[in-house]
Image 1 (cartoon, helix red, strand yellow):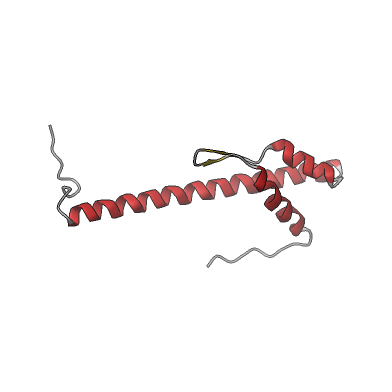
Image 2 (cartoon, rainbow, N blue to C red; image 1 turned 180 degrees about the vertical axis):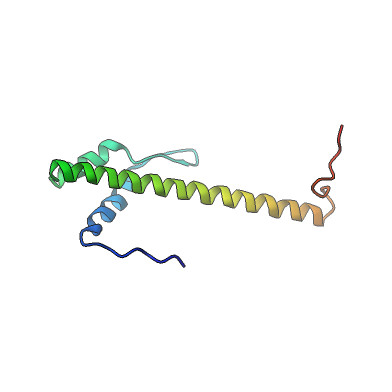
Length: 106
């Protein structure tokens, strides 16, 4: 189990905002799209963040989003690799596929 980083006072605001804003994202097929920038901007303005804090807020939320989307993509690729490997094993066990490296060379 991964150890969670220590929370700093105020982290809850960024994490709560990210969780709320992540519901505004779209999907294109299976692909998770980024949180729309204008949604993050609007959220910061709603809470009347000062200019420097607002800029930092937008950066934090967008980085959280980028990291999450990359993690989801990596997990999806790993799952596809495992499924392909299991499928090859099943085919080899039933004699339906040739062992790797023993294909025909036409």
